[in-house]
View: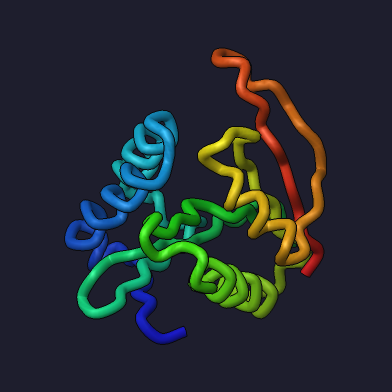
Length: 153
């Protein structure tokens, strides 16, 4: 997909502030702090793939995955800036990622999200693209419901 830049050990120090800014704008504070911790680890890209989407020199989205068990992976850090939503970009990025992980031999992809208003459009997008609910779990310290979804590839 055109305009995607893969985060690597070589470009991490340059792209990371831009990636964290997208996460800060689009996700809750807890996810932002989690991303800061994850990306501060030197080996964070060993089992994680992250793409930054740029259009006209503007960073507007990111999408990635984390390897899990041999045939499974998890969607990770999927975000589109609010002013670029509802134009099909999220679906295109998700389609690209699903094609990428399938080509790598993964058989199933999971996603964890919250059942809250801020993530309504994400849940709609996942379901529209063939993800099905796997179940709910209550978050252990703030009582938010965590929704797990998956898709067979």
